[in-house]
Length: 161
Image (cartoon, rainbow, N blue to C red; front, side, top):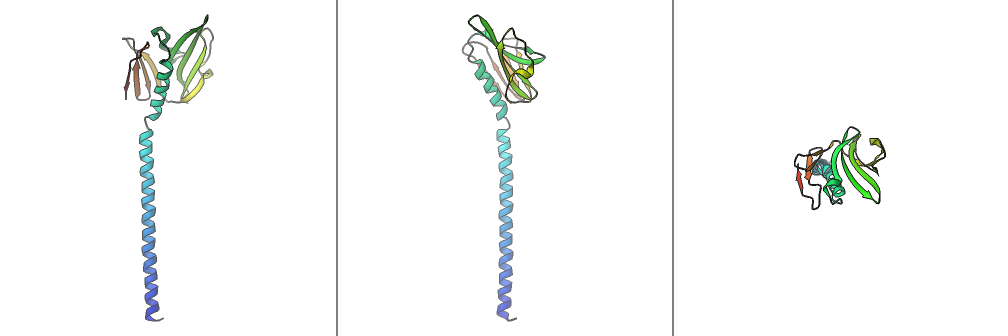
């Protein structure tokens, strides 16, 4: 083999090695970027679900204008939010609660009996709690996010968590 031919073979091998290193570097940067993106996305979505649940509850309650319509209590052993209304001569109740990892809503006449599984599934939530405080506020907690509101016209609201 001539000297020129060996030189071209060495040049070709050198170019292939440099190209392979470059390709591997690009692949590593892409994999690292995808991992960073996934972590950032997880962090940004971490509290979003709870905020959506709390916003849903707040939106449901702000439509009722007097303090006697909204209360926190117990629905078949589950903490729940009760929204009462009168339509004509009939009394109706909306019950919002968490059951089997889901936010449920049940709307019916007050006199009818239902079990927790009879409501409509709204969205997934692990931990939801309702509590009336001593000063007349209702505290709603979804996992680690909480809001307090006054169940009356012009609802005052305070978000924490």
